[in-house]
Image (cartoon, rainbow, N blue to C red; front, side, top):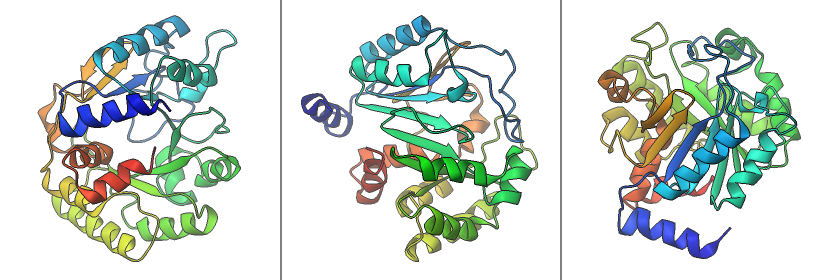
Amino acid sequence: MNTIEFLRLCVDFAILRREKPFVLGLAITDICNLACRHCKVANQQHVMMSYGEVRAHLESGWRRGARVVYFEGGEPYLWHDGRQRLDELVVLARDLGYLGVHVYTNGTHPISAPADFTWVSIDGPDDTNFALRGVAAEVALANLAACRNRCGIVFTVNTVNQRVIEPFLRLVRTRLPKLRVMFFFHTPYYGMDELFLSPEQRAEVIRTIVSCKKAGLPVMNSKAGLEAMLTGRYPHPTGLYRVVDSSGDYRCCRAIDQPGVCRHCGYSSCAEIMLARDLRPGPIRSVWHTW
């Protein structure tokens, strides 16, 4: 890592508090091998950015201030342009100067790309994950066990899996003792559906996660971050994120024009980053875990 550039990032972000898009989310394809219950954007246009398009977006993001990039999908491990695969995009981003290169994946492919951090989505033990994603959790757990790169698990809580949080954390502690779980919450991108947690349910879930964290189970969220997800008291939407896909370039998220989505946002990483900007110790530890 470029130490000088990293220090400059820290100063700009937390001390000078510059308003620029430090984080670029780049959806390189909408193609996915799963049909998750909570997702309606996969396989809609069956598009893949070309290598040249990805490079242009990375260069544009860098000029605007982005220093961390998240490769997203669809499923980014399905991306290709000729012989080029996700590995080449990770190397490209690093060569362009990005300080953090992250990948979001469903974990059904070997986790081989040399990212700085890989987020693997698993929404519960085998039966629960199958009900939500159409694949047993064991597939992703096995790929995580075989991976030698730095990884974490994203568990998106909804009405189907809200009761399996503690058993899942105990499973992770047994199977993957070096990994932690970041809990997101189902976001109503398509309206209030059967997966959406009521305020009372979200509060109960947060109490459960905090209790599990106090018990030493592998929760990545900070207590302050979880409380912010309950109260909504953290700055959002924010100009510190840009999300780019084949259809456009968006501030904060692709649903920025839907106030209800922002009001019920379940993207816990945003709360952690925004609170870390205020130099809150717990969120700083949470964010630092991915560096």
